[in-house]
Image 1: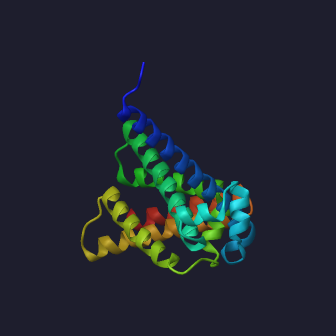
Image 2 (image 1 turned 90 degrees about the vertical axis):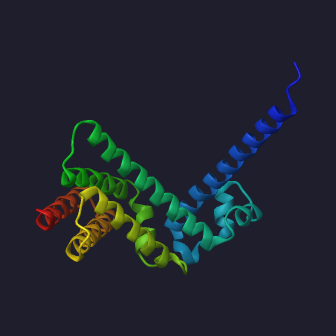
Image 3 (image 1 turned 30 degrees about the horizontal axis):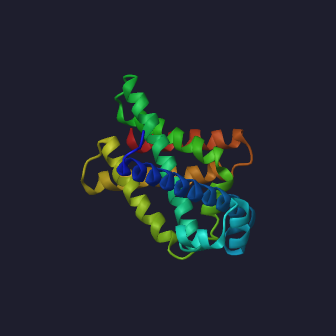
Length: 204
């Protein structure tokens, strides 16, 4: 049976997309390893592409350079972080939970778990050796997170409400960094409990 030209083109396009996605994934994973070992400044593009089994040309084609690769890695990390948090909150809702603070704490614990699991990469993002433009990207993402938390908590839209959500979001952000910097899981768990206490004091 002869396949239609459109089917062949569609399959070829799907294969090309899969190959492109796999190449990008390999480069991101390789970059994570190299940035963890050397930091951003001392990370070499040749080291990244060698670890990825790729080429310098492929890295520039897909990401544009080392800076863009770092920013793409951070975006990828944050997207997965947010996906897991949203999934945890959705599951709690499905199980019948509807208290906003409880749902917020469920999401926060998912956030902390991810920060601990990927603490080596989290440290790369918080220890200051980052490219130009990173802090702007982080601030923009932070503002969006405040907006999402405001909706989740059902906060009032007055100055006090907005400021309270901003402070709570900062508590979780800083606590996530402290979790990643903790030497042991016990220390990380103590940070998580302290963060929950602070949030309850502000919201309760």
